[in-house]
Length: 300
Image (cartoon, rainbow, N blue to C red; front, side, top):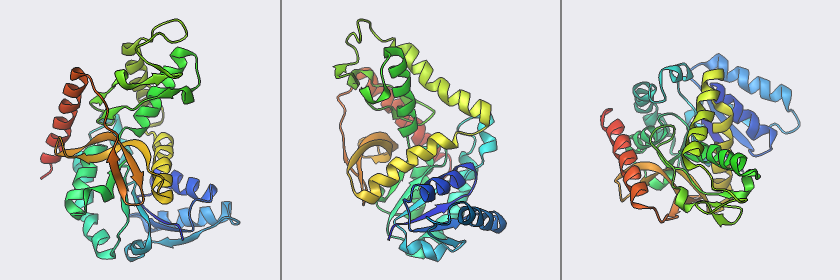
């Protein structure tokens, strides 16, 4: 039985629940939020909208998390995004300290996928509070940033995004590292000429970041992008596919969580897909790791 728990029913948590049910990707859904009425409303709305594919829905029961395969942390205050991507850190750190014991007491043995921001730092805080093996605690990391970059590259190269291969690493919506030297476009190394012209890497980085700003500035949140990124991780875990994804994981070289491509499967994160970075890209990744470490340390 495919069982998933979602903690936090704001824009992101509700949309993710809708997508999981609509796609028939879950047999049992455990919904938890600080607002009992909101949780019940989501459950009723799902039942009314999709009665034929309705999974078993359990409300507000932490002990029911024991039998789930994945717990999704979608809690956070989207209203703080207008003041900066890292504005949620203190509030989310307090939330983590409050909820970690309840998750521990449930006896859950699966994978925790964190969607909260700042993603790498809060994923690290979850792992510290839960004291679980690092492989079992992961975040969506730069998965959405990577997709944004692929779209930007494809538009500049006049190609479909599926023709673009590469990963953005480092810190989600913060100190992003664009290792263009490792990217391929239409089967060619990105530094080479594509369709007769070279791609402007500086403009690509700007356009990639611009997508995030436009979405949050216009809507106040970017739930759709994060939800589809989360679905990719969920599917990789549930199918034990070993798919390589740039997610928030503990990186032993830097002794902290950061975003880096790893194989994702039933046990969470697996083998790293080691990138051959240029010295300047290595330096940028070190700076990102230091920034994340400082954020984590500020909440101790």
